[in-house]
Length: 216
Length: 110
Image (cartoon, rainbow over all chains, first blue to last red; front, top):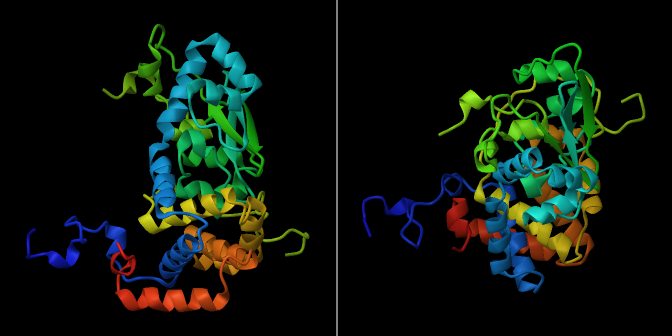
């Protein structure tokens, strides 16, 4: 073990994560205290907390992207997803989650965007934790008031003739937007298509990436 | 507020530009999230309880506390109400945690 920077090494010999290096805040101390009390009272185990965080880290927009790519390429799956989004998650082998999932399909004449005006409801089982802006006052307030303007702030300019539908999440349901399949992707396999499906396109503030921007 | 709505019901209000910023969650924030989920699955609280306390905190808290600071405060209120621990047990433990060190890592007991 090196000795020159020992202040920054945990007992395991690894550097602390940056967030563990700052001065302890009151709320961080409260988290530690609550966690220890919950363990001591037999409500949870330390292992369960770790497993929960591992599961959280494993969820990412890649799962949503796989969902969308299959939706584009498998008509039977598309039917299922539109009829029963939760069941379609199960079909993919993804966590279903306690809320009803509703898939919203964008077309050449209809664009969907999702918000949670009351709090921060988000399809975590398919996209992971929400980005900060999704929880911001600006997004929550304005997406139902001037959605075209909000989309424009993300660089998404919708043509006049395209209908824009805003979906406000509730405590009991979650939405995922299925963006339009980009042109020039005929014959692409789902794995390749999924690379075009960004998190923002599944919230509805952006389109999927064009075929020419497919990451290597 | 004059239209009968509470502060958290902010859909349709005027607000500034959306700043498309994002950050990686800190370990303590992930732990708060995990504890809320586990407190829910073990029946000590539910999502309505989480939201009730968040909404009762009022608008000031929304401006002055971060998302997971509000969540840990709500988690605490729900667990106190459920009798999981007492206010004095919590207070003593927080003091003990704070005495362990000056950083989150040092105070975490591993």
